Image (cartoon, rainbow over the protein chains, first blue to last red):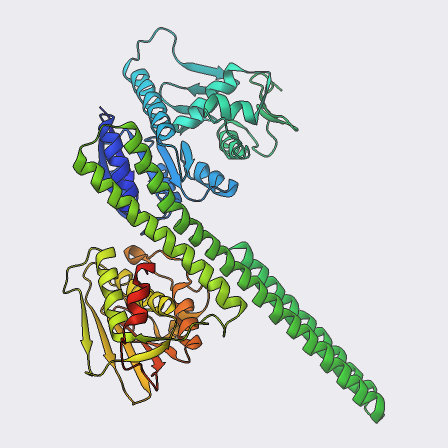
Length: 241
Length: 318
């Protein structure tokens, strides 16, 4: 049983979603404006397991809600749901801190599958946090930098940065494929489970953020390098100079 | 600052720079040719022409950038207005398809979908009407049927009341005259006009809807239909612009209202096509708004079956 927060001011869609989520055995709570959504997510940090967030909202729009919530250190998985399906909007959504994105109109079954995915990831990372005795520590260290997947943070240059779920997943994927170039499309498929023709530039924003955490000079990346025309390559042992 | 605002600032600055350069050249020319009349006059005229050209060009450019921006907001708003009901209908259809439902739930879902289909229909009508208005502003109303405005307005009130699930006393109709108020025109268009005004009044009313519709005949030749709400009101500076195409009052906070920005534009176009006009009045923000439609009265109203036009086409719906 999971608690889902629906932030949506269109009553019909909100009620329809609630009906379906309850039929799936979840608890759903509806909020109809952005200000209330931010308040609720920051007041009761552990109440919700996943958030369905609309973009066009009274008060504060979905992008603003996502950034505000993330800036305050609330990393609950967010699925953005919006009528705006243009690449710029997808990109802005991810940039604001969303973990997944669905344009309206959506398929009910896909929405539910994506929510399940987000819930599952949330549970995994919780389990990892709760089980510190897990035999192999879920940590990757290179060039005085530590990627701590269980604590969901990066420690580098004497500072630590919290990671969102999707940043964590992306790093994990990059580490798994260290030394090999990976395409944006492969990242979208493997990390986000997106198989449609979404604009693959959305990835770039994540990479920019990760570079900020990892690189000495994010403008001249040594570890997370761009492979022209393909995507990215993670080179953990390049920084020995 | 958005990219467009930056572009506007840049072009205006560039224009000022060019004008300044032209002016200083002009002064130089005047100093050099102070004693020769013909080149002096030619020079001044040419510089004046160049300066005018630069200014006209910049004004045109800025207007075009602004229009582009309005168009973008419009596309955004209409995308939302079209996709939201479709998303809702699809969601409910998939729910009906995949889940076991009680008869009561089923019936409720059908109602929701019907309301969404209506909303979709209204948006489409609005966009189509606005398109026609833009192409041929004067000829949108080919029909000249006798219409009883009083009956039509009451009809629209009933439809809007049902659409927004309002209590019976939320919208009050006051007739200030006993005579039938007949005009000649297109009943569908007039219906759209009143519905738009009533919808707006409801949308901008906030939580407590209290609307008064008054029907009056200020002179023997004119009819007034007045829709008065007690909602968020309109700032004085925006009163004129609200009838512009795509223009939407900037609301903030929780009074945010959705729409295409076409409603009042269509209202004004329909009023004008019927030889009338529409004007807005508001005491300011937070103090409600009043919209008055003035229509010319039908000089020879039909003696018999005065409501035939209304009755016959009611099913076409608002």
